[in-house]
Length: 272
Length: 262
Image 1 (cartoon, rainbow over the protein chains, first blue to last red):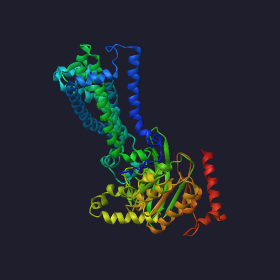
Image 2 (cartoon, chains in turn brown, blue):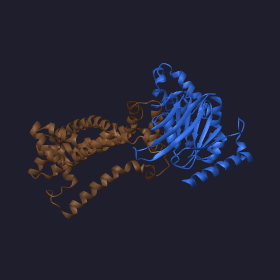
Image 3 (cartoon, chains in turn blue, green):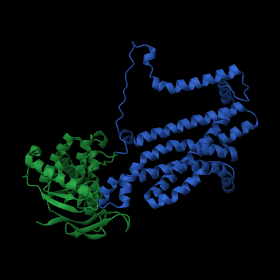
């Protein structure tokens, strides 16, 4: 859609190394390395036992040692999270459009939604277990329930904030509600929708891991809770690290999708 | 000559029986092909007038007749342009201009099959307003004045019999505004369209209109109707003539009185 103008300059041979590095691009890696370095140093200096806070080197060793279960359970968590998230995308988009359709529905359902969102999802997991038994289904549904709300709210907001002038211009031409929604409302709410996906995907991980911790035999949540019961703290941290990596990867995919789908919204201010 | 718009003894009240009366006993007529301007103190119900004529509001009392029909629902023979150009940022300028055709009953069925013909028409309009070659640009790549020109094209694409302009140039700088006055003047001369312009700018009203309606403070009604005597086509230079400024001065006095009366 929009042409992204990138300023790519070929590094010149004569420049010193420091000037040739793109510091903005390099800095996420440098900061991450710095964090691990400081962590490692702190653990060594204060001589912390690994059962309290394992050093990164110890965590990476655990990664190596428990590679197979970590990999399998990571995939399991990724699978339940992604499925729950996809359900939230479909359901959230549908309900958001429904709520944004009319002021009456918006006013009626909004308090219910807020009340529903205020309920801690950990408390819902036992109910889901009663209904569906232990395993992947409650994890998926918890991911769905927790990531659903930001999507609904964002889509509904996008629809509810159509400029009155635009609506007048179209209504004066004889546009029906459906026309206005299709031509203006839905395209207009897309940046809100894609923006909310970034929030929703990280919340989905929270949901699935909470549920796996409480009630599952698979997944990183389960792996960490059993490692914890055996005082295998490096493995707990390895699980956390695996989760963090998955979270970052999924987040960047969502950010990329957002940029691809709604480039225009970054170039224009929506509220003229 | 027949009246295109005829408003007779119209009352419009917002928010139920005890709500504010926006216009009371409003009566005026606009002939086919005429250029009418509506001026008045702020809050005099100018926007209400717009919404009454276009059928967005149905009055509690009185008659609104547009093109020989009692207005009971939005009339699709009008085009509208507001101060806010409200272009859709995800569509190119050309697609924004074609938007009304996707709505108006008469055109929406033909649009797919006759797209080339409509695009040609849109390109012609773009040329008239001085935006030739900008159709493929996105609105946010255009300046405020250019967006407002595109907005005029969008209001005219479905060949409305009546063009309603609500302070279309309010947000623009003086030079751009004068340029767009000339665009509107030429559009009115070229196309067979009736225009009602709502504005705060008295010079704008006198320069463009055949007839100026001065409205009272709320509840709005028409205090006086002025005929603008200057011959067409008018050049921007006439805005510096004494006769021109006398008309502006007189209007200014009337509106100041109307404000005081409120």
